[in-house]
Image 1 (cartoon, helix red, strand yellow):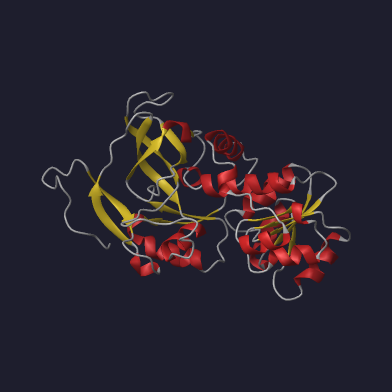
Image 2 (spheres, helix red, strand yellow):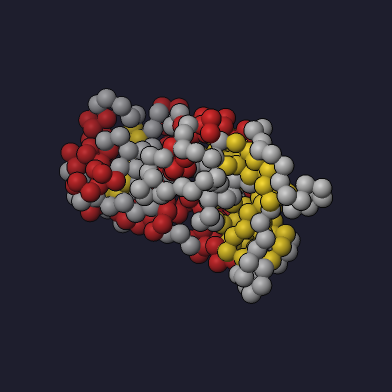
Length: 321
């Protein structure tokens, strides 16, 4: 663990907690686990003891400063949007939640990679009893991004939709949600993940050189929509394949989207507890699977991001505070 100095109230330790922080932009090595003061909930807020919290590629870009113009950080900065845990304290005017409730949801405060987090009550939903903590704690960003991406391209039973990064955190959900709408789905992924895709009714196609020809062979006809969860030229590939720009959605390549007129629906387009709750119920009923690649203790946050940044993960990586 990479800890800072003692916090106020160190004698009792009652308001102390561990939280991921970075004090400057940079690589993985700027991440540290600090001891900080535990926050107190305000009006309409609850304090949640975190059981699991997912990590995201977007957090890498924020920490590196690559998106300072879009998502600036102030230092020291916390991390984390996804969360699942137990309510341990409620502020005034809280509706629908009480101490001891098991919840999942999100915070916009970059703060869930911690032992405790304050969240607005409107951003939480009850955790279904059969839903694992890891799935519950990694559902918000990936789930709402996948939901918004599918909504953006509006696939139906007569459509063929291609999904890049089809085995990743967002892609693995997007392919399933598109299949639920009756579409034929082609998933771009490495061979190690082809069996998983096939088991969910998705046509797997190996990414890499020659992928355009392999996609055409797989669909044997017109491609109607494209969901890009990976970046690196897939927006241009979709145009090359004849997909209309308004039926292309990317969550990574905003420059290409602006150039060709594609859509950029993501987490912010579906950021509400209603969507998270519906996804949680689908997962609890086994109608959507949320693959969990691995869980790391909070103190191993650097190792967790090293794995994430290799960009070959099947499903979600979560932290256990």
